[in-house]
Length: 430
Image (cartoon, rainbow, N blue to C red; front, side):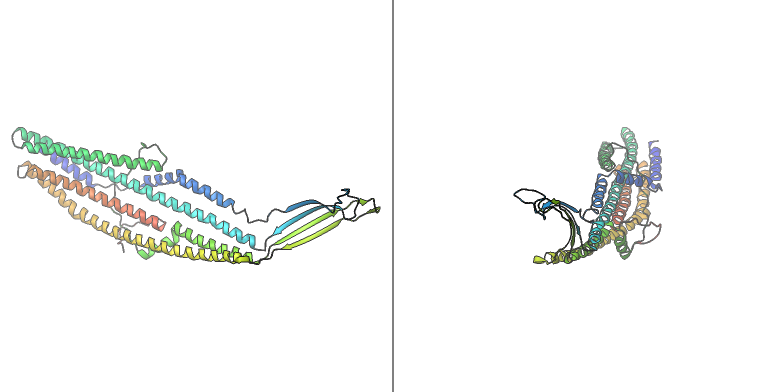
């Protein structure tokens, strides 16, 4: 009776573990969007965007005019406005005017900063997507391992009952009885470890979501690998087009070009335009009412480039351009190296999944079924059943880990290129 129960339980175990849910990870996408929405770092960068946006108006408009009030040629013996004909009250207005085009050149420099910060925000969103996805996949994997371990525990509990029955009728040794208890203890210990991993990863993910650490995280079952066709050169080109980090470097290079153009204006003169009005009173000494004066003054700065201060600004901007060009090339090289490693890993994981799911797993399932039948008729020892059962659980866990690692590597690849990959059911990695 117990043996029939064990065989039925094994059939149930194999059928459950073979079924893979076909879902689209809609819950994952919701978690990603929620993490982006509540991210303090995103909010910090949005504030930074406001800062750099407000700087555009600073230094890109005419400076405020200067109002001058004063007294002219006041006699010190009487301090009278009517004693001397040259004594008068003066009011003046002076406006500084940069060389034409200088303000727009400065505005171009400051405007690029807003574009750079926007790329920082987008790149951070991509990083959050990767981090949340990896934690989500880790939770999926841990729960899958818990499910396998629980099924193995249920099977061992049934086997334990059979061993007890056989022991009572002297058909099983006391050592077999102890072995079942030891194995159950190991499975309980493994379950506690897996529960700890699940709680740790869930807590970390809830931290991203700004939730209570005990909030429930819903996950899907682990699907089979959805093969993706990849080409290294195409991926590098996509990274050049979509990766916000690389686009930010290009914008920084463009900013340095604008800075060079702005520095070129230091070779040109700036202007000052002043208007002054002098009002004179009636003179008691001469009996005359003197005419007021109006003065207009134009000032021009002389860009003499003392000590090379102007040319050094231009040279600095040129060196910045060289720096960002090489930073971009270095980043492309690093990304290319990372893409090579990921593509090689994806190829490995695809081949391993095919071997395990199509060959090794069916063989292990058949071996377990045979071992149970042989043990029922006393052809093999209990240890053989234990080994066969452990083997199939380990294979299932390895398969789940391979599929999880595949998704995590795809997530890393999408972060590197800055865009999601189109998935396909068929296709080989190149």
